[in-house]
Figure 1 (cartoon, helix red, strand yellow):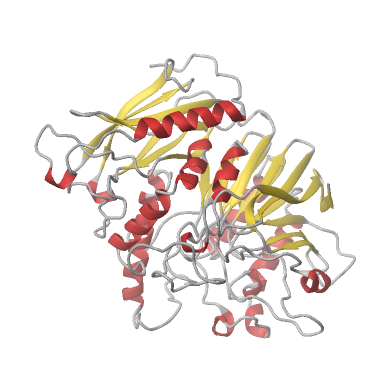
Figure 2 (cartoon, rainbow, N blue to C red; figure 1 turned 180 degrees about the horizontal axis):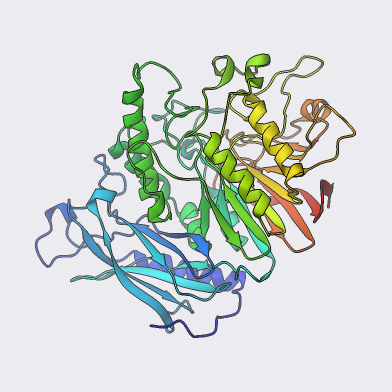
Length: 533
């Protein structure tokens, strides 16, 4: 079927919520036989307990995702599915009622890939909104929730202003995923997720405050079955499903998708991994489960313990997303990963966070970019950040401050390659920060060459506190904001300016908290530097 029909107008918030609610209801049909006991001709119990997602928007398409799991908490990681492939039908339409279907087909949910489905849809109109759903036919036909997604603008056009939500760090045990729900209510054009989508810990291994509010299922994740179960537990959360169903996602990982603070094939602790091969087996399992559970293209499918994740996505002439991987290619952290750290080891020019191939790819892409805004989506703090109050200095060795030569190469590259409007999006630290980026942060007269927006966590760290960060603002002159509440960020890109707003919640220890705007900044195109809005 040819996609020749005009698009619908942009949905209203109320209309979008209605569509989402209808879709969720459509997916929760009466269960049939238990899939492991099913006979020929019988149907699965509701297989769409993990919702739907889309991602990797391009001018003519996107990736659609779902994973069949009638029993998402199954310890064997199979989600209650039989050990065989299952055909899944999919549809894309111009309207939420699917009266104007523009693409449809059948994709195999492979048992080898955890019964995940990755549909690479192409041939659509640029800059348009679409609705999608999945279906498993049988004696009882099961229909998935309905998701909304969109294509990127034509590369030659500016398109409309781009609203990008960015988020990171969702520790299931530390709180309710209300921030995901509030993010969905923003109706962004795209969601950029910056890492720590899951946490690997066993129940109550990572406790905050007076205790965690809910528990991880299973043991610490070290096997493919364990990582599949953990992803399924997170994906079963209705607030996370709402955020996935509302817009296409651009994703990257950090450490907890595998193990805390791992560096390439160096585990956090040498015990219980006395050999690199043993840790590589764990990383291979984690990477496979990550691919299975994210709306990624087949080109990113892992090969053993390796996965091609750094990539570039365009959004017309307005923005280019340069998506980085600061885990898989890095040198081991300096000084034994002791926090805080200082000293010459972190300044070693041979130390790298990106690896030479990724760094060259990034600098070449920045230099040749024709977009107004170059958005670098990555994981760990980029600006120099002194954590020790007073005259002493101390830095986070797991961030770019542990790899200062690599950081300086990028800062110099911004200036030398004429990158006018770089915006670095960061997660990891469970705090909200906003900072100017200068080539010499010790020089108070240095002009910014870009900005960094650090989103806080969805839940990691618990509720947080007010009144945080006075010493850090004093000791880090390029820093414009420091806050300890949970939430996410919103960046609205236009031709002449970018407006950043940081949303925070008072609590995540109880569900349903309202969201407030903690701070707003504006960056004028061609004049890097944060200005309070």
